[in-house]
Length: 266
Image (cartoon, rainbow, N blue to C red; front, top):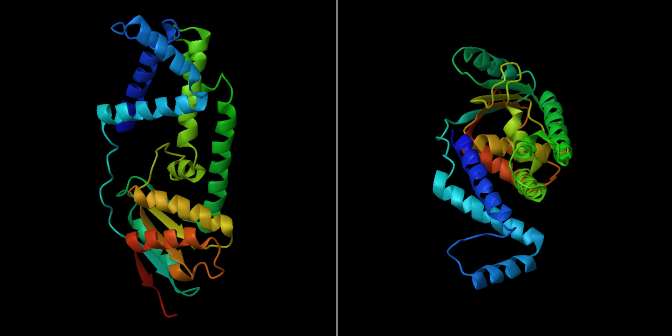
């Protein structure tokens, strides 16, 4: 509801700005005198286009914060579990028993094996990049709401530019965009998951470390409960020291959100 309300208000503000621009191509305030309008027009002419768009974006975001308020914070989720131990100690069996017990109790839940998850992450990254390429077209569905508006072509071009700028800002970090799509239940067409079961977490290469850190950190920060298995304790996952700073952030998030349990003997 918050996302929907904010988007409706954002479009309303955009349309108000567009109506002002349609009127003589400058921001109009009927109470301002001729000299003020002339100075304003000259100032706007001297503003670098990218800077002007950045400023208008920030001003619009501040207005939205005042109108709609900050995004609601997810309630503190119960701690998850990180089960680790030698091969054959029963970690996956325990996780599967837990996952089976949540059927009909937890609405949104997903279970992945590490390699399955990596393939899905690749697919989502490809989808994000493809949408970015599609968004370069004026006919992109994301901007279709603009085409029927009663504005001049230049005003519509400005609106599309503002929409693209917002889209680029939100998709700057591709892993965050992927994380938001990662737990979509494709069969039920439902977003999100209360529980993520992740079998055999590994950090076999740099991509795995970066992807896991970005996506798991995002999910755990938004209330998803992680139940994971691995042959290694979290601190031993990255023995080669790849992307150490990013890996330490992942360790910190796992320590904060999961209880670590050794299954069997080391």
